[in-house]
Length: 213
Image (cartoon, rainbow, N blue to C red):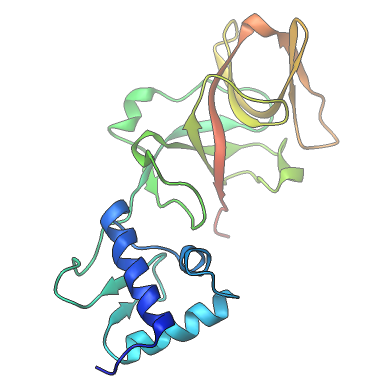
């Protein structure tokens, strides 16, 4: 193997440190930001050289599909997975998912690059039914990843539980005095306005995975 350039060595050192801390490899954007590289294309160029010279192996078909070939890092570090525990309505509310499905989920998904995966074991996902959030680029059939939360700021996109109705819905939340407005992102639909005491926040949206056509 040839001697690495200072930039390539910096990238290798960061990849090692990232895997040690997170137990899975960094994304290209993680490397770009941590190493203060001007663009992702420069990262790709140097990763190509590192692979050509036998320092790493990359799988272009796998998100974060990066291995360090030094006999220390595991040959394939497992990516975290998030359980899809049911459905949530982007439209009229739906009955919420059974939390027991965390342990026997409908399916699992891999968090997309760029989201904070600290505490990834707490994340959960729901598949969307309806079109009320279509202007926020959330379509029927997409998967939305949530971080559990009981509070949210105005404008946050949340999983809201309507206590009396025993139903859940995906909306942007706005606190308005004694009421809460659950606002769709669809100009053809009206908001849901309910007493604040009738709403529990179950989680804030951290990522959306688009449905494959």
